[in-house]
Amino acid sequence: MKNGMTMANINLHTSSTEKTAKRNKKDDHKHQNHSSKFLIFGQTTSCTSALILMIGATLMLMTISLIPKNFHPLFELPHQSQNLKLTYTAELAAKAVEPTVWTCGETDRHKQTAVVDPITNQRPFFAFVHVYKTGGSTVREFFREYAAVCKKSLALVAQCGYQPGDRRKGLLEDCKFLSCVNAPQSIERVNSTILHDNYDILGGHFIFGMADDIFSNATATPNYGNGAPQVRHMTFLRQPITRFVSHILYQQKQGNADKTDTVEETVEDIKKRIRSSREKGEYVSSSIYPIYDNLLTPEQHAMKYDQEQTTQEQQELVKVQLSIDNLLRYNAIVGMTETFSQSIQIFEHAMGQIVNSTRKEEEVQEMFSRYIGEKESKNGSKRNDISTGSVLKELNKDGEFMAIFREFVKYEQMIVDFAMDMHQKQYEAVKKGHFERYTLESSDMLYLDSVGM
Image (tube, rainbow, N blue to C red; front, side):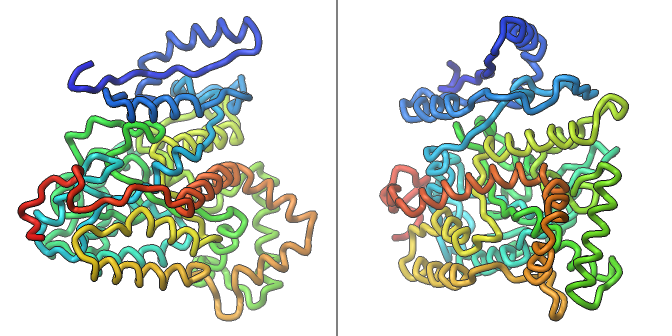
């Protein structure tokens, strides 16, 4: 070991036949260097970290091949992503939602950054990845209020996603800076240095992997919750059928699609759109910003496919697998639009521990209580008397069409099903509440004397 840290590539595979075993052995050698970019585990000398490492390694089980054997990408898939079936454990859920340690209401920037997050071993920093049509407007409002109450610095950005054909995209420098809270007004853009020096929370339509180098001295690579990424990632997801209906209503509201006058007309318009797409062999990703747009890293967005040798389904499967892989590698805190109140309770648990002011802690708790009282996020897509719920109610009367609809969204559903399992386990961990309560005397504090307590 060097400096108490070793980086080891973990090759995980099983085989049901001798032929498969030989092929995998050959693939191990072929992909050794390439796969290490995707699955790198940090192992510290402490017994606790070693135990966490063992949990992360044992939770991954090889079951059935997700990617078809005749798949031909122009890039080489990481060996583990070809056949890996990932699961999420209660241990990782508890790790994801373990309370960070904040000072709240402190105006001195030096004192603001005086504590260490027990998960990341850096000062606390949260990155909220806003997936399109998942209630993100309400969550942005929540973060604005949270930042104002606690004197935290929030940066909101948009238009950060990778654009096909442009390999520069996926950089923080390319983001459109929307607004900020408690930051110098002279700042009109963001990059890793600016975020490191001036901000505590990053939110908006950016993608996983963009915030990896905010702490340039980071030694722990995102790796299934072990060693921990240096920035805590949070996101909201939503059931794909509901998200698509919300998308249609939003497009009509914005004037980007022909408006319909009644619920019945809206339903017929949706049926026409989906049937037309399925006749072409298309899935929901052809009609709406797909969930994986935000869950894939810049490097994964840059992957190219052999269009003559791969089908749309095969490409979708790869993106599903990589998206699930990223949710687990970053051990993201997952909220669900359908369980908004429950989601905010998870956020409160991870973000609500204040160490320097009882009054501020009570103020933060009151703020969280108001958002927890909202059973669902605000519906920014509702058009007068036409709501997402009313359209879904009418669609569900046509069982034959709903089978087509489910086929249309089936790949996004795979991602959301995995995310929902993460969400439920994280909520269960919060309800159990078996977490250490940090105080100013904690060894995790970077300094004590200058706090003035």
